[in-house]
Length: 474
Image 1 (cartoon, helix red, strand yellow):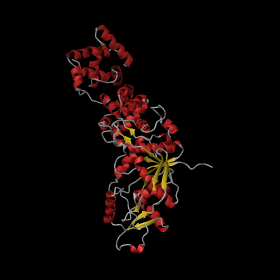
Image 2 (cartoon, rainbow, N blue to C red):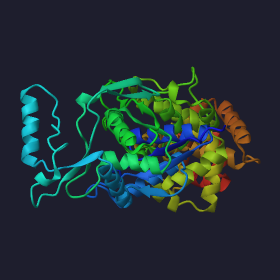
Image 3 (cartoon, rainbow, N blue to C red):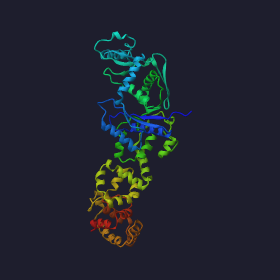
Image 4 (cartoon, one colour):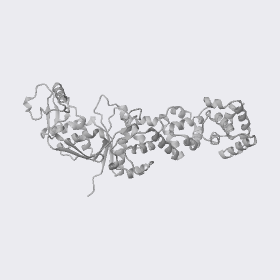
């Protein structure tokens, strides 16, 4: 007998961008489903109409696509399924598994106050659970509550947390429908997961207490309870709850900081999960290795320095043509990227592609790469940075005038030939190579740092290089 296919879901609330914790949850769901030949579904939990926005939905979808995470079928809106949620409540009422509660806000406040005074957690006291409907006050719209089991215990065998047990006497009758007729989150999640065929729920451990209550709804409806994996939240490097200073930003912020999506995937998958000592992993390896039972119970710690180092490794190991394509695809998201893109004509695009081997060696992210590539698209005369101007004193400008003639006479304009010519000039004039290379770098790029100077000369070409040198020579 074949096992049913695995179905996971990612179900964010559209109240902001796809934050880093949500991105990791989506990745874990995607890896587990895809790695086992199953499906991952996408549901937008947009029942909070005041805080849910179309822009946030678009940002979440854009973030998932940037990370390379796809999903099966269309995007499901939880709000649009409200009629189905109410239909389930009608079933529970008809079967005596739910009841109408007419407790007023004042009564509920009194219950909470009494519980606090007695040192108990605030709980609804079940006063309408078994009362005759004829006692209902006129003109009051009731909330609908589930008849939660009062005896025994509720157990969840969690892939990450292990066996988790709740005493049913400590759980009150949760609300399924508010008095305004709107379904609660707890109800909607269960109905949607059941109807969508979700077999495995992978989410943050801040939802762990919800697991018991949602299990009661599954049981009341006679539905199978999905397997669950509640993953620890991400903390900062100091062990405190992740905040913006630690990196609790939207995925779009990491894109704007120039991180590669494959590096982000690699970094996120290792936040709470590992495979031996493997640091860098291809997507194929992640799919082959990832498993829910290997996720740790402790909170993962987000470390910008580790992310940056990993991203730098990916930058250097990515093939030049692939990195060139990724760079162009992300330009619009980088600070100053649109201006750079606007100046890329055919000649400058070819220069950029040719310069990629040298550019990527010095860059930890695409922002670094953009900064070091600026000299390729700038018009003459170059705007000199302050450090470059300090290099170009009278002696340096005289050196430029002399070396320009040597370069002009170099027959083959490639890095090796240009290096041989300049080294020969340095030996003949008893100069150190650095005293020639630094003025050349300043004149050619307007900066004090750049890729190898002979690569810069080769990339810019004979005409542009000599013209830039002449602009600064005395």
